[in-house]
Length: 428
Image 1 (cartoon, rainbow, N blue to C red):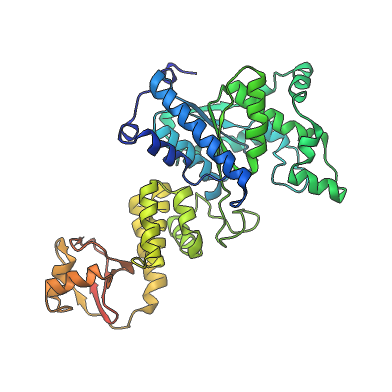
Image 2 (tube, rainbow, N blue to C red):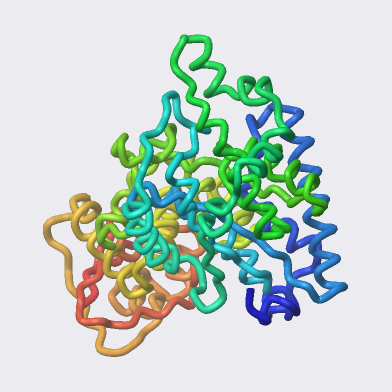
């Protein structure tokens, strides 16, 4: 590894956040099992405490934490669900820690059986490496390429001899593997469980040893591989066991089932801006906060404020969802593309509710909305226009206006201003 990893330099974000705030930020959205499971809650508390200790030690010793995320490039394209752990890795990166993006160039040959009800098909190295190239290109839409260490686990896993493999296996029992839900169901059904599938947790656990990891990030389907295999093998090799940062599986556009390309409920990160925006707007309201926590750049206090506003009825769910769609599209396509995607959505999907005849009002220079509303005669005064905005009664292109000082800047396109329930104005 390069010398840049040897000294931790606090980033501007790290300087602004207390230790407790950093822990809250990094643990945001984490989930260690079913919500009502006391064991999961206990594990989450333990990991949060260990993370706090590691962060404090990092500040004291000026050594950045070594944080890694492993991905198996068994396909060539990514969807939003794949980016959830990447977003968590980016958060550590933002705080100045060493972010390691591990390509499972050897584990991919076997495939993780954790969330599968049958054995995965074996892959060849050529296909894996071709997919890996597209993975890194797409991952850099989330991660900072200048601050990301790329590793491939065939570098150490392909070098293990049979004696070393026996040593790794000696730390686990067959019962531990058969107790896992996916294996147990297959065993109960009489379905085949192949011996090479047991190798996968050993391989992933050894990754943590080879990388000397302080923290590993993964989904809830990775708890056994990270918490049991990884931590146990690190202890066996005389290392301090890594902190497990476990993020939930992102629900798809149906709001219930895991996002999956095969199920058709996925949102590709390479989807065009308009398509991505529209798919996000199709999400059920109840998963909006989950998406804010897992796939946006929002901090815990920002998300808490949105939750309060929704609960208190101060914001309409549609407006919040539009904010979510803008944020996600801007991550992958930029702010301008997000604004254009929103304008497209409003024009195609929301303007159907508008009257056929809308008076036009020409705006030649930036002007406050309260001035436009009053000058166009939609209210009797600017004070009344301000009150309507404060009460949530003004919308621009379908989005609720909350800032009484908001300035409208003409951009060559038409925009629809709605004041109250029945007054409309097309700004040109």
